[in-house]
Amino acid sequence: MSLLDLKRTFKNDNEMRNQTLPGAEESEYPPGMKLHLDTEDIHKIESIQSLDVGATVDITARGSVISKDEHSKKDGSKDRSMVIQIEMISVNEDKPMDKWSTKEFMQKRNKRK
Image: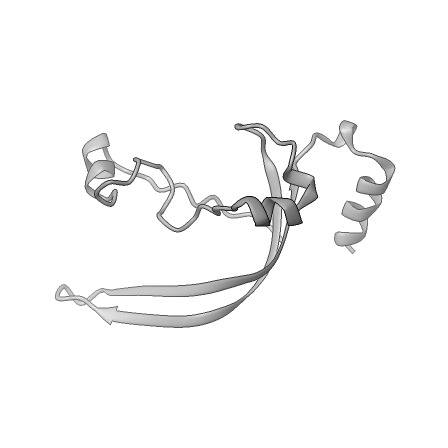
């Protein structure tokens, strides 16, 4: 599975501010693309308990599409939206290959088959 960059492109800083929800921090990524994990979630996912701010993680998840909408706009274009409920998740620190244990190497190798 290849990863897609969800970073939004803006013509200028003003355009980014106009697309940011009031009260929300400005971000290059769309709203809803953040995962907020609370104490109970962190306790369940042992692999993230010792991560520091700025660490890069590899996320694998399974979910179900729970709603899908399409709206016509005045200019003839369409807006689409979809809500996916994440039901299962795995989060691991994204380490360079030379830092992988033998077990990590074998797991990643077997995923590619």
